[in-house]
Image (cartoon, rainbow, N blue to C red; front, side):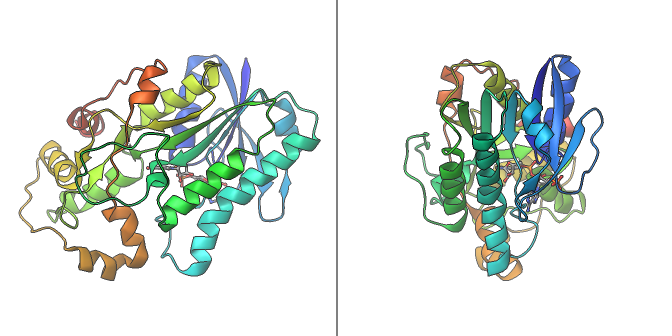
Length: 303
Ligand SMILES: NC(=O)c1ccc[n+]([C@@H]2O[C@H](COP(=O)([O-])OP(=O)(O)OC[C@H]3O[C@@H](n4cnc5c(N)ncnc54)[C@H](OP(=O)(O)O)[C@@H]3O)[C@@H](O)[C@H]2O)c1
């Protein structure tokens, strides 16, 4: 059985990925966690990124590392110290893994690093062209976080096959964007945000986990890949899809952009950003999506 070590395995993506890996019967799963939070079936090892410490046994046992850990971008207001935490939880954790992979005896053959389509930066709403993996990075805060995170991933020793997955907006009923968008809709207060035209390049959480599993298995995957479904929708469309699926009316006007900035400060960038990313490369690599239609993806959680 291949031994997969997931950092941040207790999170939204990591816990579902753990379930799917274990259900296949082909993998053993280990986690690096700060708190040691148990997820059924996984062996949890502690690490402390700030102190530069980790339980080395996990790295020595692992065949593959999937590095997901990082402070949640919507966790707290983006004051300077929080922005530093968002950045350093990713760059320093990666540097710690790289350092240990350089000095320890280990058998790691594959390293898969998470990034985000936020790499491409904030775009004007409803752009018709899609962002491909070779396109330039943006200059806003989240884009710079992705740039620095990817630079850190690139330091992984070259003897290890390495891939980077630029994750889109993950749809799940356990957390993330869908839950936050569904809350006001359920409370009869649903409304599109900003002009509502910002493009949401979404992905069903199970398809995302299947991309990570493909990256574990497919020796040809050694580059950077967008993980987004083929048919992105606008914020207004996704809000309408959620309302229809939940049988709730939408009668309120859009929440204007200035109100979003008043409410969230700079964090509003994360909600109002429009990014249309292309799925071409992961499809060419042989990945087949189960969910290509946002309506079907939302229904999968709520019907
Ligand atoms: N969900 C999305 O829509 C989305 C979109 C694009 C990119 N991504 C990226 O994909 C990754 C996984 O996403 P997710 O939604 O599963 O995130 P999540 O639910 O927030 O989980 C991330 C995990 O990282 C660990 N973590 C948090 N702060 C940390 C810190 N300061 N130092 C070290 N570890 C820390 C936590 O595990 P412990 O508490 O066990 O240590 C947490 O469970 C994240 O890096 C995220 O930025 C997610």
